[in-house]
Length: 455
Ligand SMILES: Cc1cc2nc3c(=O)[nH]c(=O)nc-3n(C[C@H](O)[C@H](O)[C@H](O)COP(=O)(O)OP(=O)(O)OC[C@H]3O[C@@H](n4cnc5c(N)ncnc54)[C@H](O)[C@@H]3O)c2cc1C
Image (tube, rainbow, N blue to C red; front, side):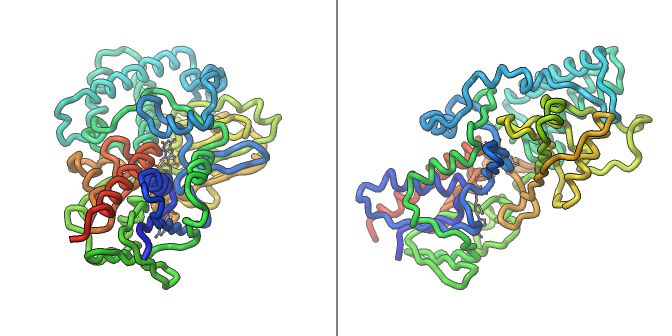
């Protein structure tokens, strides 16, 4: 029998192993991490392309204050230096603004856009300070605030609406929900901000994973080993692999995504408590994909700033008749960071989006927005977080009708089975630092159980 079996080698699983070793005074702890994929990192996945990097999953270290990933990456010198922020090609607020029909927005339209943007951010700032957010959805709150605000303005109503819809799409990509009407306002109020900065990593998120892996023995991880069942016994656990073999341990740590838990692919015997099952069912798990188009150096010169994309509101003459949902979710084409990869990223919010022809469609969208021909990309990449059975989505959020303790409930141990993962962090859910901290929390819970004298 070993001491701890960790299911999943994403950031939370590796962080758990690292923290278990750090608190193991005897140096005797026997740990195994079983990972279904042939690689570690989970939703942190960086592609290396001729010396440049492309982020398929997590790309930013969100904030500096009390962000464990920021602190860890700083000590390992993995972050891009502050100077990247002043790069004029990157500054988010200076990005060109285009209508999806191919026209660049006029100066007057840009002014309206900037005003709507400011107002939108102010609505959110106020919302985040609410004491009793109630059961409202984020979408309802934002609609209400926007309509009150827009009534007092004399700008072109269609432009205000198009800018507002842009802001909602952009915001959805951060929350992860399919729309803002199923995302709870209380969840937004609860999510803790660790500072406004979004800092990229020099060599991508996989560099964090590699650094963390160096802190645990190689022999502890078994790749290509999917787990199908976890049996909770009185004083041990039995973990059954898809291959048919089993691991017996004194404790198990489950770090699979909320999407995998929802799917029921991983069985628990006995069944998990009803309140946990309800939290699994109700907590939102988003569907965010990225389509990345990589261009050659000449084409890139022309595209390197990317642009924000305005969709004509309902009823507008320029609005295409058959607009697919995924198309409308594309709010920008922006450069991948670090930009040396010469690629533009389009975020796509759509459930079960794994269409092999998507890069061609996204290229078509890019051409329509630019109103001109763009040479074919030299390569394209489409993520499949939603369709991949080892993830089944992107990141979690609190749904309307849920109470804010849902994330803590998801992280609550059940017998000798412990739970980590971004979806178990009460305030940093949906993030890499949430995943990292949840692994540390779990390590401490496991150690307390293992150190308890036998009754
Ligand atoms: C497109 C996208 C963009 C993102 N952008 C950011 C960002 O900019 N900044 C940020 O902070 N966060 C971002 N995130 C979120 C961040 O990536 C995640 O919160 C974090 O990586 C989750 O780590 P985890 O360990 O909780 O889960 P995971 O990374 O999902 O790890 C779970 C592991 O379990 C394995 N597994 C699944 N099923 C089984 C099984 N049956 N048996 C064994 N192993 C199994 C999986 O293969 C996986 O390796 C993004 C996520 C996505 C998808």
